[in-house]
Length: 638
Image (cartoon, rainbow, N blue to C red; front, side, top):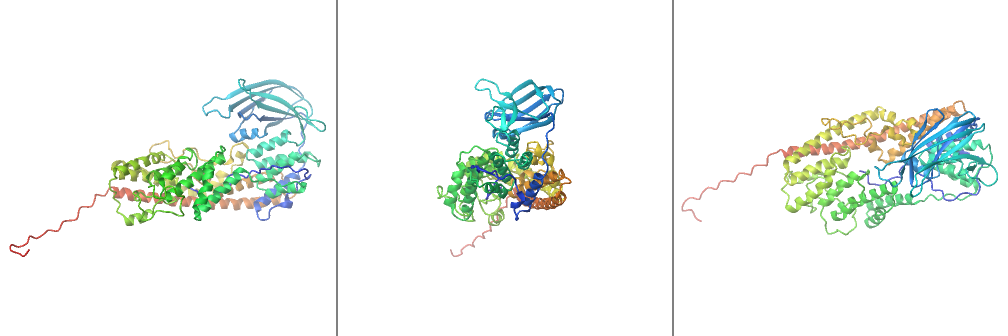
């Protein structure tokens, strides 16, 4: 479990709120390359080389087909297009791409060449309503018509529109046409402006987390301008894209060179993230009241986007464990209960909720959490004997507990038994979850300890045996995973550049299937896939950032290879290859360190389960013999 300070998740999206009045006509990226970041310099150099390439020319009869949807109530799932008797053009949108269409984005389904004349055109779509439940049916429709292709290039936009309160969603057909002077007409656009389909395609790519591809489209559009002035919309989109791709200095240079104001990048999500990190730091530094106030504001936030919900869960988790360290379990319950049922922090919240139901209220029930208020040997906690090994500790380390107390647990009082049964409710929810998760591993031990304490000895024995079997399998799988990482197999699984253009997160190609630990064969406790550990590594900000940089370098390599023969391409490709090897080594080191930590946790819990089972089978010690009392001789003095 990681409830410490966190970095910003994913790529940083610029929040540009003001547009400069004038902009430069070209983009000298290398002039502002960042000397302290070698990867950023390689990104800038590759984009600069791409900018120097000649503009692609559209031949006669070229048709570019774009798909759009700005109806916020609809999410486009799938589109199919047939032109004459050719095979269908089909695309399935991810949720992120469906939302990118709402941000004035267009998806370029195809650029094809047709003979001049009339062609049959048919399109099918499937969509769903934004607020519809998962089991709700999808809306569908068909567009069937003829299109006329002339010798000059053409653009068509298919726009999904809602049917109003009682109508059905439908596709609208828009033949797009560029205008040079005069007012814009319906279905017309100004070159490189906000309604140019090519710029809207770049917007779509950036909004679906493909900034490098978006930058490539924008540079092609700039090359087609032939040095002519471009609208501010173009430079705004280019600046946002470069910032998202990890080139903030180059993005800012677009504003400085045009004489406009720099963008304001302090949005609400960035501020919340800063407040969270500051709140955690204040708690760690002993300023409990100030830290709890900052985290409490985040924990009670109302944002419904994914980033706000994840940060809210983490704030509730930190506050809950802080209350447990302060021996105020009653205060911790609402924090743990506020964590979402499905999320990365769910397991730790369920574990903490069980401990909160056992922890005493203490005299500081309404007090803010105290600094490092970890339980000690003399702490008056009725359930000290139950070990808590997951950080943050709630009691002393289990080794000290064993030195201080005998293992055999006394029968719980009726009040203690009631509390233990309440704690078992959230802990039982952990059964059948990821056996590598430390919260689940601790739950494996906490459940039989509780059962043993209330006198259910046979059930406790069965649960200890089951926990040992699962932990032994997890320990063996972690050994295999570390060997695979050292052998470079993790890097091979992550090197999935072909998955970067299908709209889904590229690393999903290497991600294990959901609930991989539930084996098809009941006799096999855990049939782990080769990359089962990735979901744990992805929870670490450092690994995720390094993995994204590795992927970006592979994209740079592919782009340079497509420019084979260009001046400077060979030398730049060699630099990118070297940087990629260094980044791969960094990923291996980070993965090995994290897997080593998980292995230590697993062996710690495995040792505890074996120790507990051994003592559970011991016979109680026989009572000490009573010394015989020799009767006093008769007549002895009394």
